Amino acid sequence: MTGRPITIEDLTVDGVPCKMARPLGPAGTGVVVLHQAPGYSPQIADWLERLAADGHLVIAPLLLHHRGEQAVDPFERFGGDLAAFAAFLPGDEEVRGDVTAVLGFLRGSGVEPGRTGILGFSYGGRAAFLTATEHRLGAAVTFYGNGIQNDGYPGNDGAPALADRVPRLRTPWLGLYGDRDVLLAEGELDEFEVSLREAPGFTELVRYPTAGHAFDVDTTFGPGAPSTLDPDAATDATERTRAFLRTHLSGDPNGATQGPRPLEGQT
Image 1: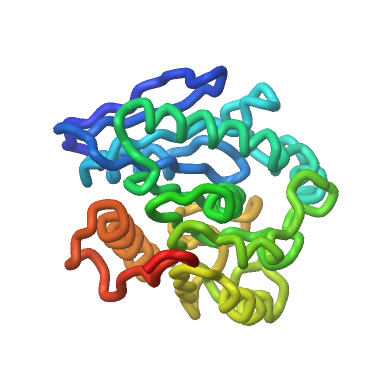
Image 2: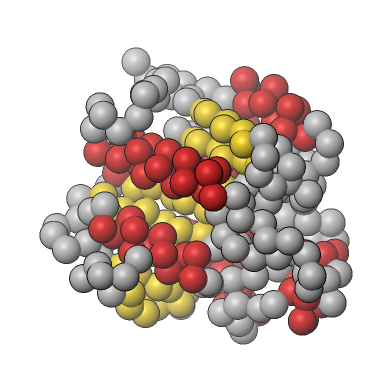
């Protein structure tokens, strides 16, 4: 991401610490970016720069501020105990308040909801889906969001499964998943595809046969584990996301091969 004359700045929105990147010209569109459970990372910094270079005003709330952190290493802090880590994470009420604050900031900056997108990864991808059921935005994208079809955060009652919310989706939604995701149950993506048929608006679930969880970052699930990165899936998912946001936020007919279906009550 080097060489781009775009900088990431710190700001606080209604008590929520955030990172933000501004486009070089006027911003008529905006994107909220929600990080993975361990917190703010180079992955999110890259997306802030990338999306600002695409012309969006981009803002990422630091969701772990509720726990006094910007980022944590779950293996260092919890010894790889995923249940303990899940219990540590902020629940939906806390995340909902943070997202509502940054959506308000974008609207106050002149970006209307229909020209606002939300993009999230894993824990943040689940939160992006949740937001899409509560706000009528221009677009929502989820990278490998566990905890939607089935409970993905045992021990955290504040982050239940969200499958019953599918009929309430108010925003065009794109999901990007690896078929080898170790954080999903066997057959969970098949069940999710069936659940999505109940959505009143446009949805698309893209599955990468060779990819697992966090397929777009070079990380591991613990010392000695193999990298999660799947370069082909990462490249495809990145371009799909940029095209989806471009199409649904700006109305660019060349941004994607398929446009949105009308939301319920629209023609």
